[in-house]
Image 1 (cartoon, one colour):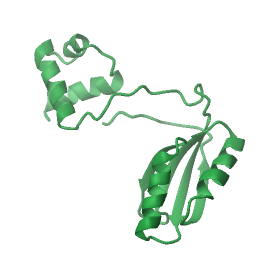
Image 2: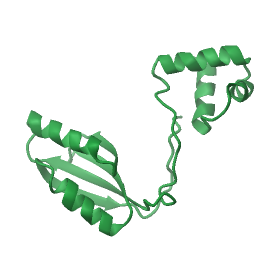
Image 3: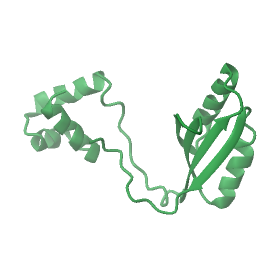
Image 4: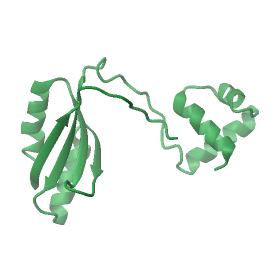
Length: 149
């Protein structure tokens, strides 16, 4: 990747709905080379997908929680089962494998505290192999971006 590719990525991270002509103008390229670069970035896996960023509160999910999970055992079936359950659960936006005191860090969204309780009772407490769960609720956000530097 060169400087021009990084300019293209920066512009697409700001607004992925730009037309190729608009993008080319912003990065000072003609449309054909610009499109070729975008296609190459997609083919190389640098651009994985295009998404709409949805306002959580406006969509009915005003509560975000970060949940630290430690498994009781690290046997293959338990790990695979836990990870598949997290992939299959829509409230789980992200599930990261961690170093340190916990095995996983989950980012979840719910419609309220009652929905959080339901999530805990119906998903987390019914998932085999969990040893400990530690939750931190978000009460404000200073920065939330998908734009890489």
